[in-house]
Image (cartoon, rainbow, N blue to C red; front, side, top):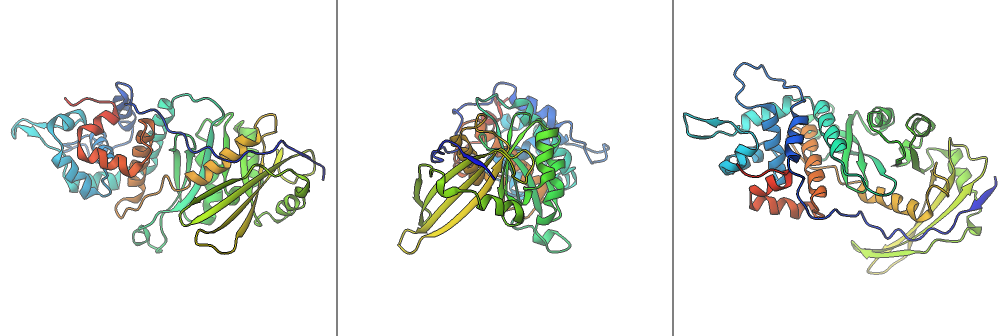
Length: 388
């Protein structure tokens, strides 16, 4: 099978870029409120004292301040000053002469009964509508993980499993869906991505999603591109990639990192495939060689990873391929949290909080939560509102 050497890949030095420290534009929260108001309210309208949008906004603000449970959300709301509660849409009780935020029982009942899929769709729509244009090709990582701490809530003892599409640069979740298990991720790939406008984007995914149907869907139906890891679940394709004349391909400039108790050396190579690769729309083959060893010393451990992409060399330079592959590895844990209450809804709220943090320049999520916990009014700043 003929193969032409692409220009050498530079080391994947680029980290996920942050955004300048800023507030959302004025009315940003109002726009979010409008999207949240589209989520169907599961409650009987008789006797409703708190609008669904206000309960959701209170929950988002509390999660910005580090809340991880329904009880923590209600405690944050109980301590929030009147101006903050008013800005979030909490009702004023004229008889009591004060704002009356919902209690834990109401928050729990509402968030456990709300349609998680409709909430995900509302959040994703707001993200798409408010997403600022950025230079360069957009990269979207598809990643699936089991949520820790959720085994007790399922009848079969299995942890809740989510599949998400994440903007690599912004670190925000564009869409997510629950799946029955790791093996069922394949059937949810299409439904997850089909509602998104991915024209011109590059989608990165692990070996589970290196499926011919996925490649055809992305390139033919969605006018997108892919970078897909290839392992032995695709034995024919894996064998073809391993047989390419990699010894004749100049190694990319290496990047060596030290941290987390080990040192790592990465080298990347790419070849332009002219014919014969048994995968739809494949234009380049990629090999990543990763060598690691403990900082205390010892033997090097070498792992070789192969990938294919529909992007030709003229469409994406090797340095860009390296950045997107590295970006996928970095993004994997961003959208998963540990929670024991309403895991799907709490995850959606956590994803939204991360999106807001990224857009307002916060790079360290834990530090951002602590900062917002020290002053409730900061949640309004992040949401683009001012205390009433």
